Length: 276
Ligand code: MLT
Image 1 (tube, rainbow, N blue to C red):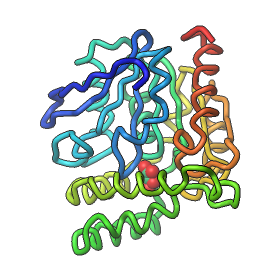
Image 2 (image 1 turned 135 degrees about the vertical axis):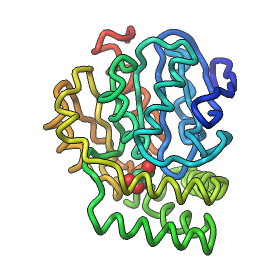
Image 3 (image 1 turned 60 degrees about the vertical axis):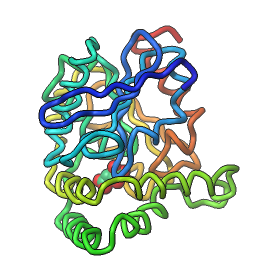
């Protein structure tokens, strides 16, 4: 990280979370997507010049101990306990995809922990029956064939596919890093998380009651949670603004890091949480 980074191991319930922190001041919690870990936020390290980054591996992922998650509610309870253990006041909670589901639960069920919300490449709705069946099939295949089947299924869908996006410098390295990240997650965590994702509730009604400022960000080429998901969220979440980022897919903070980091700082300034 640009500012010096520390690695903590924090006991939370029946698990020990590995969490990287850097910088000082306003806490900004970055919650990774499935089936990744804290490393997906590497391009946000420069934000530690402005805020206190808190970047955990969620339970069972990365260097955090298992067991994997049984529900999104459990991941939100972990995150709330983590912020408490690190003596953070209300935080800016930023989550991508699965991390965005967790961020929504934090805002609804642990509102005292949340100063503002940044939902990235995610959705408010629960899985459809078809999506649940796909997850059950992937969980069964993962048990037989290991993490490579998940990497094969997911990596091609994570990134933007238009010609300019494919031609971007560093694209092969990004694809390789995502594949490596998936391959290093335990099979049991992937299976548990697929169950947690499939059983998550629809948050639409609950999110109407969120009162903190919210920034919604989505890649224009997101194939997993397309811009329409975030347009729906914009109509639901009371104090929200939406940014659609060109030439980005499901991994906007990684694919368009300069745009994302600037948008986050501008949002914090507009919400009077941080100077521009
Ligand atoms: C993620 O990126 O976290 C997953 O794609 C979430 C999901 O499959 O719903």
